[in-house]
Image (cartoon, rainbow over all chains, first blue to last red; front, side):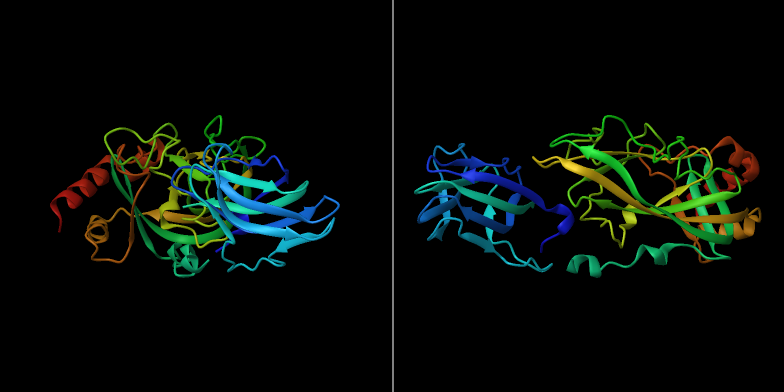
Length: 116
Length: 229
């Protein structure tokens, strides 16, 4: 269940080089991602791969792929955030969010909560 | 949140006119009859930004801009009874009562203010209530607590806030040994409360209250508790 008082915001740019964004999930907790909004900056199709990494991006585990067909296409999941919402992604303790694209930049915005 | 809805409201724990209250101090029990009550609150009380993985630089005695303590009655004729909730959910509030006496340790080693032991966070005592019974505080003049906060998360907490629900009571001190006996042996309905905790021992009764209650009644209360009735 989402708790508005515990939500954190994170904005960063996913690139073709790939990399971790945000902070490391604390011991004994998980990062519950409740919202993801993306915007494709590349003039063409662009795939965003989302996952997590516990070694600062050297290796990563994939959670999902988000496809953008055209420039400035946006992905917004979910549209609204009800109080009884369940997380859309879960990042384990000791890891950070990992993002990489196949063609160009994608701007990413997350809302998440770290909790047991 | 669903877990919150299952909790009983802390408001049911406030006392009304005529209720009997026995506060345990290091020297013994002081027994009171509540004469009147008046509600108040402090919301929000800001502890400010708490850095990722950090604490407050100093213990906070919950004061106004002139350093007057909200949780301590300004006059001897009142008792304060307070509960509090915490914003953010993961902000860990540690407690000293009286000041410089760390509370809620579990093992022989005193709890730290960066650990997993001995705190209330915003999930246990939500900012919007109902507040945890663990947050219950009774204070009299010259006796007040202090708070610190630990942020266990890797992101800064922009503003940790507390929400205090406070009841101010007027009272008379009970001098009848028979009534004191009945209160302490639970033969009369009354609220018994240990001021501050048991390790370290309960708070020392302020001198002004010791004089009003008297050594004889304090010793008597100890005898009743130790020998029963």
